[in-house]
Image: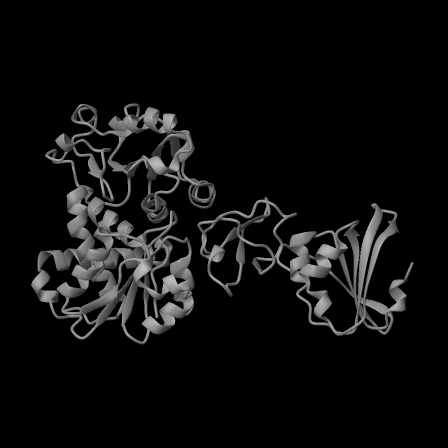
Length: 306
Length: 147
């Protein structure tokens, strides 16, 4: 039985096959409308999430399956003090596969150790978010027609941004990838990513503070929200937040084929005027997220491809 | 001072940094053993000036790998028939289970009961261990040890 806890749980070849399947689903969704008939997805969301939970649910419903679960810790037995280990043991009796979102880092890994069904990490604290990464990879591949020879700019909260951590891990295995890490000093990429991924594999990277200085060299710009609640000093937040508002003026200096990604929700880090730019790919990501989660669940459930 | 020879069969942990023996006593759960355990503190050492020694009688089942994490300079002598029959070389263990605790408040280990604290060696040369759950590095070897 396979789980998806960390982006590296899938080999590059497996990711390629999964994205191919997602592309085929996108071309003809009806063909896959009953492949999970009779299957049940449990969505165990211990913290609020709209997009990811609905994406998982839509994916299973699109395949003829059904969903059950909860959308906050308050509405689960966690509020009574039940452990993740016990919850997953029970859920394994009700469902065929589960997606778990938890505020504590490592909760999905803990769950996978006690689960009788495939566990998908749907985001754990500020740690990892591998299905968002599959979404990002599908979008990058669609826009750039490749997952190698890319300069990727990652901008915003790189310290607690789990989508950033997973994306760096996943892309680090492709050829000729370089990262430009754009963040305030306080929100730099954690050392485990720097040491274990970038330095360990000798992947070129730069840490900078200004987006204007580097935007012209990027193939991909991955924006994330600078989270006010992470700052100890509100003055620092006020000073830095405006640095990371992507505007049409800044986009003028970007390559004509650069793609702008964002895991959403957006607050104010991408001006609305950018939405109409053909390089804006963040709403494509939302749609791709459903297709890629369909492909992932089919793969983990070992469902026959239609 | 007791001699190694005074043990007929057992294990002698020698060249423990002076003052560290009780920490090792706790980490190896020696209090749970049903055999004779001698802790010798501040013994004379030609190498270090002072050292601690722990002698364990019999064939106790002890996770000696953890000693490699604490101090790879500790000498482990296996005694049988009153003689040293083996000197174990200590190396950094690849996995530490319930030896140190993750200090990351965002880690699942901070809330889940009955969870093993597991760390993986991720950097031999710098002796870096990271929590398998949250990947946070364990920073301080002198604090937070599990009993």
